[in-house]
Length: 329
Image (tube, rainbow, N blue to C red; front, side):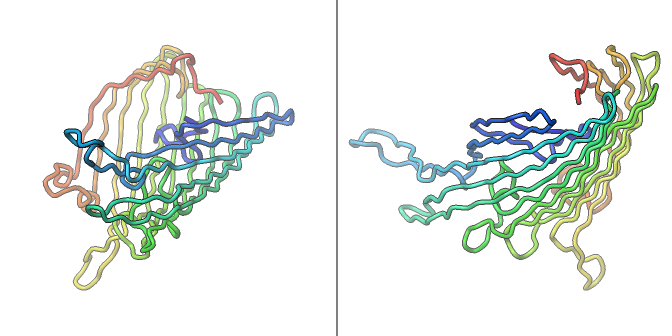
């Protein structure tokens, strides 16, 4: 597993989050510059990568033997350049340039009994950058990230491509992502926030369900009492537009645009002291979720979420980071 900075409130790594069987090398320069290279393989569980067929075993033995007709893995390599400009005793600015290459070899699969088709090789790339500013105190920081993925890489390293071109390639697919996140703390007060806008298009020329624009903004102001307990409020706005049209008015078709709002009350205990990232963190959670009609239409008609516009959630949570009591930056 290889990944960088996350959007904590969304449990999401926007720039680099790779899972492969592989390895890498890195070098840290005295000037505050770090260079990392990685390469590895993975094989998502999907017929795009692997197809097995039952065949008679050798020498007329009983039963059937499983034969891998298609068995190909994806090669993922990455290059990451990081530089930090220190400011004062503990603050600084961090810049990251990042890239990936994805490649899958050609193969063959069975489309009906003893009828085969060739599956072409394919490739893709990722280019991205991150700019961060941090104080070095109380985990106060802000991260701005931009990322663009094309071809095979647009579908992610653990997903299989869908809606391909007629030649069964991923050429033309892309994903564009911009994120802004951070944390601010002073005295007994703190503010966590996260946001992103994402646009995805698959390799098929016509718009379909998988083509989408989506985004979210989430904020969590919080206050601590007696240094070991506090309460947080949380609010988020989420929207998604799918590449399918619905008849908004007679003879007027528009893309489906869904919206959702969420509001929360979260009292908590932090035995390690005040801080959004002090651990352990034990919390009681109440969330109110409001979905509009378009958001409810994304669920099957029999699903309770398709019929209910308002949801209430009550839960208890606890979070530890073993080997650390804080969110180190």
